[in-house]
Image (cartoon, rainbow over all chains, first blue to last red):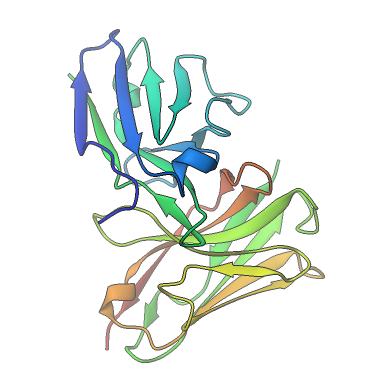
Length: 110
Length: 120
């Protein structure tokens, strides 16, 4: 069982918007930066968001991140079939002294 | 651009030691801005952080694996390595190396991953 809680799956139609939640506690999300990763089938994870809401160079602004208290959210607008992937949140847990990931959310673009 | 490449045996026997190396190209492992980490993903499951190392040799390990894990760095070869001892079938996974921002702790460059199977 993951320290960070994500919904197992979300779905939406092409062109629509979807949000993926990541719930934690004060020892992890509440006091540390959150990152988000996209993992396409059979490939390595790719950084989408770092420091809660910043996008690395090359990541389109369709992807956004936010954090409030002990929860974080990834938003994806203008959904494309190529966005079908597993999405993971990650952060540091200061109490456990460990890097932690959410269990992952499978996005289906219907 | 910076690239990371994992290498090592794809098959390890139970109770033996898993050894992997990550070679960094297109940049220096001695950057003060980054850690260098290992992450694994069992078949059909999520990501698990194993540990990270700074170029100076400072290490940070997942407490659940700490008794079995050693991560080391060789700045002369621009490489860092993972050793996991006393492996069992539960250690079967895809193992990734990644560059990790020292401030953000986000992992912005990943290797392609290498599959390690623990079996006799």
